[in-house]
Amino acid sequence: MTDVFRGMWVVGYRELLRFIQERSRLFSSFAMPLLFLVIFGAGFNRIIGAMTPGVDFIQFMYPGIIAMTVLMNSVMSGLSVVWDREFGFLKEILVAPLGRSGIVLGKAAGSAAVAVVQGIIMLVLAPLLGVSLSPMLIIKLIPTLIIISLSLSGLGVLIASRMRSQQGFGIIIQLIIFPLIFLSGIFFPVNNVPTWMAFISKINPLTYGVDAIRQLFLGKEIAAMGGAMGQAGSAIGVTVLGHTMTILEDMLIVAIFGVVLLSLAAWSFSKQE
Amino acid sequence: MNIIEVEELSRNFGQLVAVDRVSFQVAEGEIFGFLGPNGAGKTTTINMLCTLLTPTSGRAMVNGYDVVRQRSEVRRSIGLVFQEPTLDEYLTAEQNLRFHAYAYKIPKEIREKRISELLELVELSDRRKSKVRTFSGGMKRRLEISRGLLHSPRVLFLDEPTLGLDPQTRRHIWDHILAVRKQNNLTIFLTTHYMDEAENSDRISIIDHGHIIALDAPDKLKDALGGDVVMLKAEDNNAAALELKERYGLSSVIQNGTITFSVPQGEKFLPKLMDSFQSRLLSIGIRRPTLDDVFLKLTGRAIRDEEAGSKEQMKGRRMRRGHGR
Image (cartoon, rainbow over the protein chains, first blue to last red):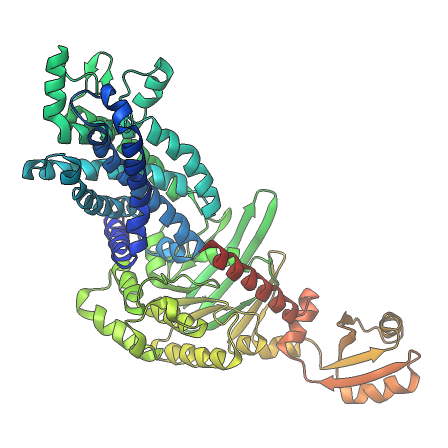
């Protein structure tokens, strides 16, 4: 057990060291989300405003963009496993007296710490977009980001655990990541969509992460809007079996996804030779 | 005392039997040379001994621990320097060593002291805060050796420790290895394609097609060849080799246009040969056998061919890397 715990902190420690020294990773996780925010925000703001009454489209999208940054960062932590394998350092980790599941948890923990830093950097945009911030919001945002990041890193490392090349990882990630992003409620509410799409959205862990962050930022607006429409925020929130999810329920679902994904990743990682 | 004990160790990859019921022992403090052509089962055996690969059958003990059931204990007992680099190039020399120290749970009180000592030993003290990315091949190797020794292992595995380095750097690295070994009564398990390096071994084992085909001290292996090595060039090498076989009962190997064979008392054999040999000879030479001859005789391949092969691989890997980044 101590081998697992030490594995977790040693690998997590190195992730942070690398993150501090390699600034390109910080920007590569930001690039795509910011691009989406600027382009979609500018392009769709006036047209789609009607779909999300009470908030600007860009305000609606902004919490989702934070979740997307967390997702990109988790993908990077998966990619770092593939890199480590290609550049040999993974061997140094694998022959050390460290528990394999600890190695997976260390990657996830390192990526969660990075996600918190990035999430907080993203907050700089809030005043520019007219989204109000409060100390309470920031305090609640941190554990939310940590849970989402741990869970999605499980996905990243699971895919990476058997990948031998960056190219292979790149292809799989393209196939998985775009559906995850577009069907997570970042760009449009997942309730007013065809049944098949709603179904996929609701088995997508990112959906619940996006919803939780959005409720943190826009809780008041969503409630007011729901009141005006006579129902509790269902125009924007995620409803499962007729029930609108609360933040805690969202996080519970993300956490369950996380436990399953991380367990699979640890299992797959320990089986490799 | 035997620090490594291997009994009937086998490993299959699907249909392929990479290592086939191999048995050997390595005594404590010994330098054990493990030679063989590429694909003979060297790396597979090393990977099993250092717990990276599970044996299909058989048993191996390192420092008294079973490589399957006591992985953590085995891992703490061994230091490793692999063929391919395993450093984090984006961290500094010191950070790489510190990572290793944390991973192997080296107590805080001795950690920094040991890191300084080892950096001193491999003459990298002045570069301890430089990123590994900026190091030359020889410096990286030295850093890896110091890292492999950081947790005071009982056995140091050196898998091609000087592959792709220039002769001067190779000698330098060997000076370090031999110095370290003296200090700590360390056992060294070595694979190499350089015969002069293999000469450092107390005993050499040659593996081919998953079997150990020879295991003895280098001098004894050379003696076993039976005397001196004669090298011939003839107008028709094949005919000459046939004649050697038929007339003198000598089996020879043709390699790069030269026929090589061994005879006891070569200086007496040569005049006899000159007198009566039918094939036209172009050149003739005689020398004491080397490990190269042993290798050539036992595996049918010259070790230098292997070396070239490995260098090609290295080049391929570097190119892929350059591309990847």
